[in-house]
Image 1 (tube, rainbow, N blue to C red):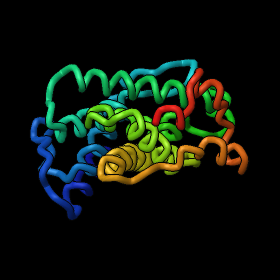
Image 2: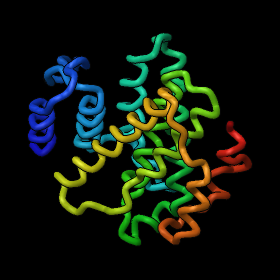
Image 3: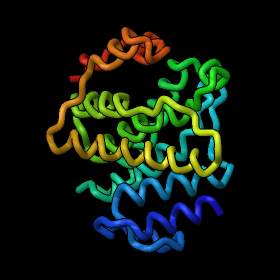
Image 4: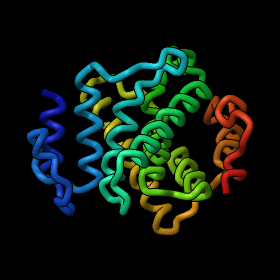
Length: 212
């Protein structure tokens, strides 16, 4: 019922109603609203996959971003979509591990929400055919907009997760249009003390600037 109420709200929003999810019983939606709605629907099944080490449930983050972005790509084939999903999964797993996984959860955070914008940005970027430099920019933008709070109620959690995934898609599209991300965002976050990201775990031998 919470997902139904949120989807009804999305159906009444303004925007380009160009993305059709009739097979899910939803009216035509704009891209951001379609991504958010898909994310919430997956999350409410209670069946999305969980990686214990990172405490991240990636399906509700990666699949909506990859599917919607792939619908915009000129090469709408299975291989790029599968690559986008794989890249998104790897990104959210690495980010969740870098956050500390269960430690982040027990400290009051929600790992899935914390990595959602960045993971969605990576998945969408790969689906759009981004070059390595663009992928680094999208990841940086996604990290810059990553939520820092853990909503307590289920409606708040659903709303926040969908919004974060939609932000990731927006980051990927912004980079495709020429926006550059701050690739020093990890170091800056650590220096400000606003993150407990273990950059060695996240990068595993490469740097964001090295992707360009």
